[in-house]
Length: 120
Figure (cartoon, rainbow, N blue to C red):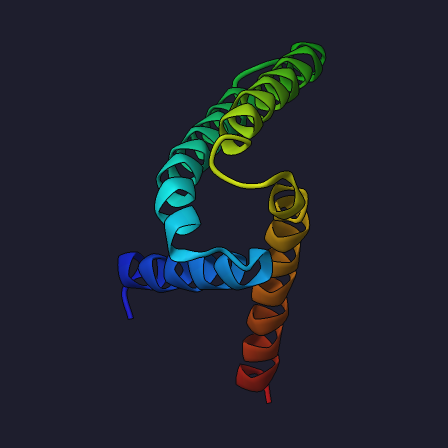
């Protein structure tokens, strides 16, 4: 399976996982996912910039730059959480971060299991 196809499959699993964990209705999903996907893309762009910049700077400048990127990420999160509040009830929104973390942990666990099976 090529990388693009694997990423599509992973994205579909993430949507299903978070939708289930947050117990989103179809109406909530229709409003939430376009905004969340936009937020997710912007978050990835920030991380990519941060990684590229890290290799180009001296260590002292890198720390300052890293703190700046973390501040930008926090501003982005606050901005989008305000928008999310218009798409989801607070009770569901409060579960989002835990659902994201839980999904990442499930993916990591599956990757480790696959590696272990290959190494047998």
